[in-house]
Structure formats: C-alpha cells, structure tokens
Image (tube, rainbow, N blue to C red; front, side, top):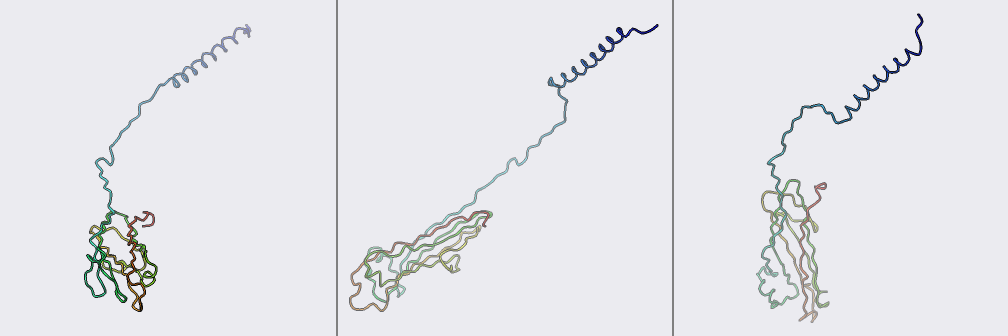
Length: 194
C-alpha cells in the first residue's frame, strides 16, 4: 500500500521542531547565569614593606670676617666700625653642612654673589669674589654636584672684598658700600639625570 504523503510530512516537521526547541532550551540555560566552578587561590605580597624617604638639607654655620693681616674683624664689620683702606682685603668665611641621604640622590650646590651696592666711587675701587669648596676640594666655577652619602658633608664658602691697592689722593674716603650677600642653593637633580 502506498504511503500517504500528507501523513508523513507533519510528523517530520514536528520532530524537527522538538529538536530545535531542545537546542534553544540549552542555549537559554547557558545564558541564564549558570556557572562552572573553577579553582582559585590568592596570596598577600609585599606586606609589611617599609619605604623611607631620603634627606637633602643645607645648614649654615657661624661666619667670620678676617682682614688682609689675618685678624678676626667680625665684630667690627658687623657694627660698622671697621675702616677698610687701599690694599686691604676683607674675607667672609662660613662652613655649611650638607645632609644628603638617599639612593639615586644627587644634587647641585651653587653660589651667587649679589655684589656691592652703595657709593659708586668706592664700588669702583673694590672687587668682590666668591669661592666654594666641597669636602675640602675647591670648586671650579659657581656650582658642583653633591652625591648622597651616609656621612654629613662640608661646604666651605668665602667672599673676598679687595680694596684696590693703587687708590690714591682722596678717592672714596669716608664712602660706604654694602655687600649684597652670597646665596647658596642646593637643588636635587632629576633622577633620570643622576
């Protein structure tokens, strides 16, 4: 007996619909938040680590003035009673302390003499020069590099004001000038430049 084509087609379509529905159900189950267990572990790292900042500090000391004869004239300079004459040289000396501690720490120490102000006639007869030495080594120019050390370092600075020896007649007598001062700067270098 011949098979009726109208009866087999609906069964075949129904079977495919059931398979498709089952597939959609699995997909929906996966998308609905089902998870799978995974092993995991954790460990604390770098706990209790202590990081300490370094130090960069410049401390001034007590300065003194001496004249060309090597006499300490600090008190007379400070109260304005010292009378400088042609050929004399007044030197201001000060010992400073550098505290530079820290890995990769380097700094630049420099000096800047502000010069003389006051009566032009006396200024014309004077010269002012500054010098500096780091840990006993004279510095060429106005700056040098400081490298960190566990020990304190010594910076000696000096300013010498010299009255021209050949000044004659009554030039600059009784005139007054003022030393602007000596600025000392200590500045850290960028780590990339150290």
